[in-house]
Length: 348
Image (cartoon, rainbow, N blue to C red; front, top):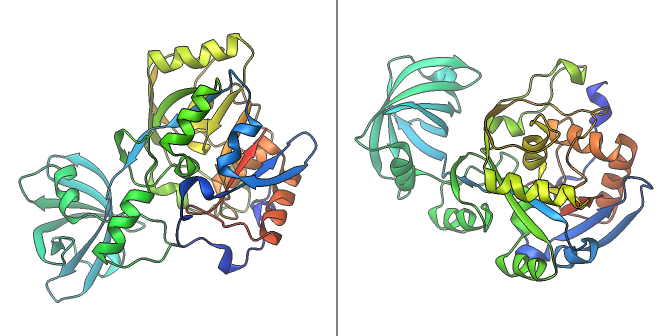
């Protein structure tokens, strides 16, 4: 399949820069993948499109305050994105303008009040902006990020190092059910849920199961290859425990729908061998493209994704390419808000 088939036009003003005033006040586009028919509604009406016994599978990864700012000794400003702590005091990170840095150079990481917090020594440049840093502080990455980190918003959401704005984003660029630290991007389909909505759905007979997939920075990387099949997707760590596996299997035995909340939940479930869900931990680089045969997922809730992205390819595989692009054209015409802080779809 040609990657260009995943292109679509989007007015720049529809790229959401802020979340909805209330999480459940996001709009919701309902897409019937068999007929292509759509319904316009709001996320707080989600229960109207669910049935007792449906099992929602949510990703409970917790977003780290992974974005940080630093300065060179010369005073030049550096922006970084923490990826992983590969060894004690050793970070893998993306650095903007890494080409200007020299191996062996020392940079100064700033705290959220813009004061120097600690030094970092550039051990190695790994290509495409990725670097290894030796951190000169006697604390683990989570502790340090708690002092210096900002929300790792995607590049199309414009933010600087304003700590007041950062506090607001830290609350909203996180699901209300986030539990396990490790993501450097949010599973954005889950941002529309509130505790109150989830309690109401449970009272109406809707089940919840949780997986963990730590979303990586590669989720925003566009597909550059001419042919979709030539793209290599980033690997991400996932876990599903016995209790949640049992909940999903119980719903399947009763012929109830498994509804994945977000593409990360889809990829985690579909990475498992089947025919039943078994407890598992590991990494997945599963790239779901049109033609894929889904094993577990009966419906999905998702946001609107970037053109030429692996996430849009997954949605097109599930809903059909023409249905997906038609739904996106409808959403654009109706002024839905797109991408991470934007509105949602449920596809069934």
